[in-house]
Length: 231
Image (cartoon, rainbow, N blue to C red; front, side, top):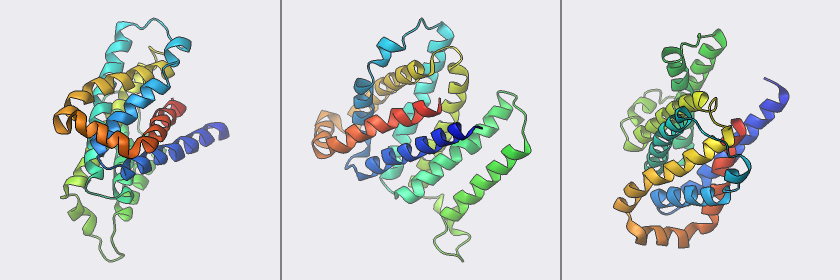
């Protein structure tokens, strides 16, 4: 990995944290996520003009498949933040993602397991465990915390991250990465809409927009920017 790539990854991580901070500050997380994705789709619409290309059926199939897990991720992360703080949900979801991604890559893509990869997974698992320690002597507490719905939602979000990332590794071989990401975002909006309306309705959406439109627009910019950087 070059120094430039390292800086890109660090920048993406910092931008991504901003998205989660904005999400945590919202009143209704489900409504916030919907508005965030919608605003992101409108904001980055020029992608359709400058990055458009003919897309083979394999590309469509992969980006729609990715969108299924992206929509599930946003739904799960919204549920997780309803019952837990950023300090718990963020490391659980973002840490579980690469751990499971390594497993899927070995099992499904037949990628070899390296010592560096194994060490990285162990480091992530250890970090997840330590960050959930309420105190130095409470070594059993993180395991008990997994009984909480918010922790399980965070882990579900991490599983979704690993699955859509796995699909994306193949998908960007068929579609230009920025266009791929943008179209997958819109499919995520389509898939989330019926669940969002069933839970809160248009009234809930209007109320959340009035309450946090500034944070929503910020998150709409950072959410797609962070992911597009690493692609």
